[in-house]
Image (cartoon, rainbow, N blue to C red):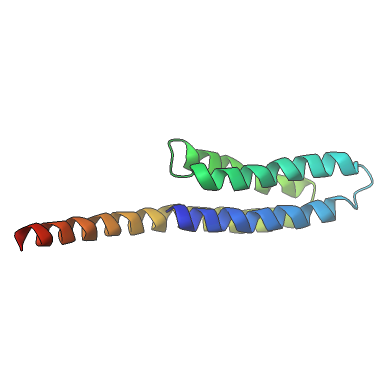
Length: 117
């Protein structure tokens, strides 16, 4: 699960960075505000890569997905991109857990065969 979720989060780092570039063109927003918010969001994505398998990691990821969708109020394209990344996050968590379960089954089966031999 960690690999799939981390891949999604790293993709989000780039999307958030590009959204920051687009948001800079908004005359109502200061450059400092845009890059503070974007920088914190990008940093959270990177840090979440390391804690995604710990308790609460997936929930933090969902909170980040909601924030990404909500950023569409500033950069309207982010409504679509946020929804796409939320779907990718769901798939990463869902299929990542299935892969982890399959790996554990295979490891247990191999251990049983090793002991029987």
